[in-house]
Image 1 (cartoon, rainbow, N blue to C red):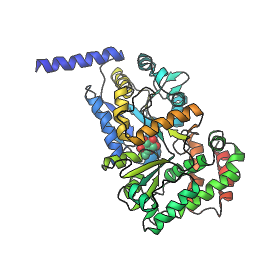
Image 2 (cartoon, rainbow, N blue to C red):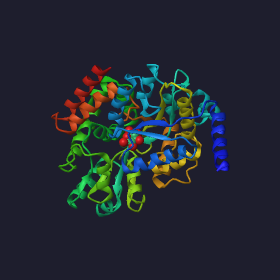
Image 3 (tube, protein in one colour):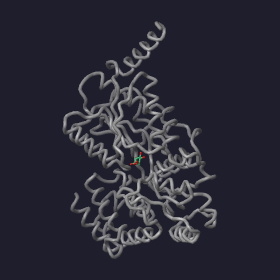
Image 4 (tube, rainbow, N blue to C red):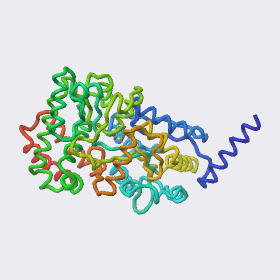
Length: 417
Ligand code: BGC
């Protein structure tokens, strides 16, 4: 008994020494990781903290993409009682930082040498005014397609490389009696598909439209073409798509009821949870026409200003844990994402994970790595929500054609800025 207590005290003392703070309290964590695959990944983090004597108070707010979570967060911050740590994306992080709501992780970041190992594209959102405000746990990307291998084989066996090949495969899957495109009709999911379509129009176009918010690109011919493609894809979903959660669409592809899903690589977490193997049961490809380019989003844990040394020690301990290379490997293998550090070996990753790591590094070097509009890394929430409205409208038949939708997009984005 004395030995056990002694060991525990040594661990706590070591932790206090490394964080330079008081004994860490439990962490209360707001997140939207509620699907089977997401929960499995979250457990890796919970267990890691538990092994250091730090307890977990769960605050899950379901809803892919995190919109509902961000509403719940605003209520907690307004009430003067922010959670210890919050899963957050891109511009949401820097928006809270600009309001002075976030704490400072510089001590733990300096000790861990984060500046040297976190890609600049991520640091843009993990730092504000030169100070570290969030710890990035992963890099996801949205321009992926997840295909049921047996359904692909029955449709000719060749993964589509461009738009025409994609339509040919979807047509064959339809003729084979399955739902070619498994999709959940929620604005963020519609927008996730649209990231891929816009990127397939070219890197310069994606940047002009979604990063620079150039009105000519937003309202022009290429955007009209992108919307026409989105409207075409609407013809390949089933009648019950509206409101369906993304993981249920993944389940359709997993069980062969659906042919493919266009979704970020968190979908892979669902395939893995179901015991499916890349290359055997499913195939992962970049959205046709986007190989070489990546639209990324990174889940980061932002640490709010909290009162009390125990809470601050918990934040520091959690941030340190998240940035541990072994943890980044273990977590991302389960989550479907790739590490947020450049120095994590790829040994433990499956073929899709290895591809994700190579694609990310190549896109970063080639200048073809862009923030995802659908997942808060291209523009602030007001613009993102304006894009959601028009994209969802287009998917659901609000506009007679792509050109009308493009004009509406340019107008909506201008009004949102
Ligand atoms: C997050 C992922 C999450 C997905 C679906 C994305 O915005 O980055 O971590 O799995 O939403 O919930």
